[in-house]
Length: 310
Image (tube, rainbow, N blue to C red; front, side, top):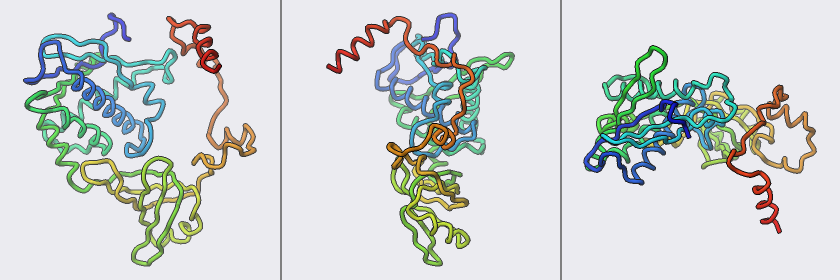
């Protein structure tokens, strides 16, 4: 937990007829925390140039730099205060990435509230859409977000209310597209001249229909039943981040290792595995230091493990 001397990185003022001073219902608190964390991770992915529409977990770097912890619930209009959960040895030397992410997200919410037509990343839009289950005129009418002051820059404020959630929903109701990349097995293809399409089965999630142009037909045919990576423009289903179809711009073969198939018993050398996974030599062994809570006894911990194995 953050110490009392460390200022919170983020404050939320929760207002509404269902909110009492210094109190908040546990289901509301859990939902707010879930949607806030999800949206911050989406914003971080957008700023890192990663694909925000994808199956599977968030990248480890973003989890390390942008995971929040609740450090206080204050009175007045119930105020939730958050800090950042930081590893003992940050992956980024100047770990202010989380601060910048929250600042960018605050600006995005402000633009939606002001009615600006600023382009919002599809994943961030999907994250904000989750707040439509939180904002309810009968319980929580608004959530005011204030980020921490950075240097001489003033603290920024933004409000998530019914106006913002309705504008997010309006944007998500229409046709939306997003650049994506998908890893999976090219399981099927149809080579009808006017209906060229194939199916990709990713390791996580449902199969995805992909469309391709005639100049890719031979390449698609040669990659049938093999692990591939597809880059293209995805059409998203309304109100969700589910991919309806992808128009392939580039397709390439992937080593089976990336798909986790038939590799557990494969006779690959350490060098081959490192090359395939792009793992580089460790230059500073001190990054492995720590990781065990100071108030826990290692011997007791190991004793419990060995006892459970008997």
